[in-house]
Image 1 (cartoon, rainbow, N blue to C red):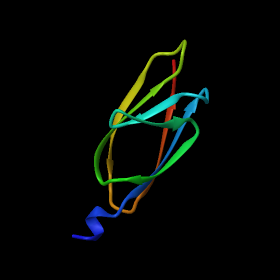
Image 2 (cartoon, rainbow, N blue to C red; image 1 turned 180 degrees about the vertical axis):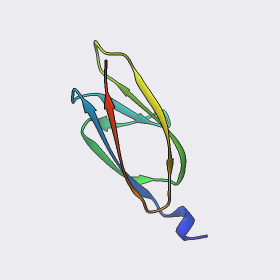
Image 3 (cartoon, rainbow, N blue to C red; image 1 turned 30 degrees about the horizontal axis):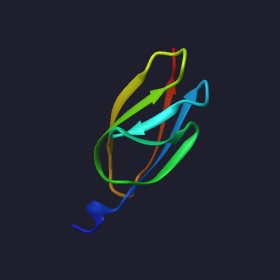
Length: 74
């Protein structure tokens, strides 16, 4: 049970850079950004940049994992 709650790390990048990033509707920074304390489970990711369409996805985060999520903003 302890291993299941071990936080994961998400590296979030966008093209172009400078997008505001939200994980589960919480602002975590501006791309490129690394979030070190993401809890396991399905996480909703949103990236917003003025002049571009909002980008959304969901990722299944595993305990202790390192994941890179990249977005191409249109």
